[in-house]
Structures are given as C-alpha cells and as structure tokens.
Length: 188
Image (cartoon, rainbow, N blue to C red; front, side):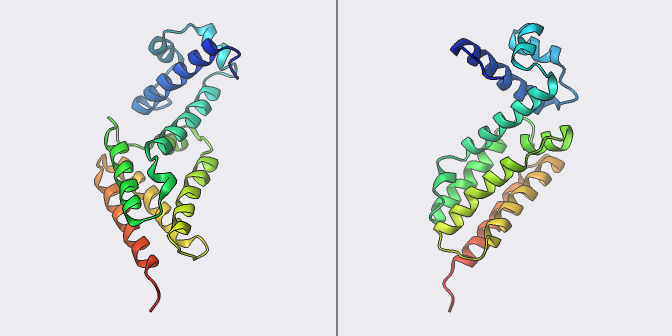
C-alpha cells in the first residue's frame, strides 16, 4: 500500500527495513508480527494500515527491499563491469556485502526457500546486469558466459549458507572470473 504522506512513507520504510533484518536473522517462521511491532515501535493497527493483507504482504515488501539492498551493495561496480578491474571490484563488493552479515545467507534466496517468495523478477534483473557487463567486455555468446557467471554466483551463495562460510562464494566468484577471462580472449 503506498503511503500518502512523507511521514507515512518513512514509517512504512522503517517497518520494512527493520522486519527485513529480523527475518534475515530469525527466518520468516521465527519472526512474528509482534516481534516486528516491538522492533519498529509500531502498533498492530499501523502494521495492518501499511500491510492490510498481513505478514504475506510484508514478506513481499521485504523481498523487494532486500532485492534493492543486494543490488545497491554491488554498486557502482555492478553498473559498470567493463574491464577486468571492474569485475574484480564487483567480486570484492559481493564478498564484502555478504561477509558483513551476521548470518551468511542471501536474503532473497532465504525468502524464496522459506516463504516461497517468487524471486524470478529480481533474479532476471540481477542477471541482466551481468549480461550487460559481459556484452561490454565484447563477449558475444548468446548469454552463456553471463549465465555461467550468474549460476556460479548463485551456487556460491547457496553453499555459503549451507556451510556458513564465505569460502564457497569466494571460490565460485573466482571461478566465474576465470570463465570471463577465458571467454574474453581473442580467438587465435
């Protein structure tokens, strides 16, 4: 539900951001509306004013927020990706973002697995940035290089969560950059 005032928009944004952090730490099932109310200092009527359909609607708003948060953590490098150096900076930004989290998990992946959130639009958007970067590197291969890089990233995120270690993500991104370097070489 769109907020009609600046104060209303700020309240809704605060609810979503706080709820996003709680859900990332505790999971959707481990975070009640009462937890969110306590964490945000809002009343039950305020929660239902901004999210009349309840927790499911709030979870969808959290997914959208987390999607932007994930992409913003990779900027400006994600928007550039036009040299090997920019790809290395992007890798470092991804590792820094996930490494700074208390719980090693991709928030979008966690919401997809636990709450059945449809993250396909977010994933297509994220992959689109990778595709644009691959194209800027002069690689023309019907999207296979971008798909390989994105698949490595997503696999690394999944293994990172399972092992609670940043190392699978680091290894996956290193492998992705090897693929990029190999495919960017001029043909003999």
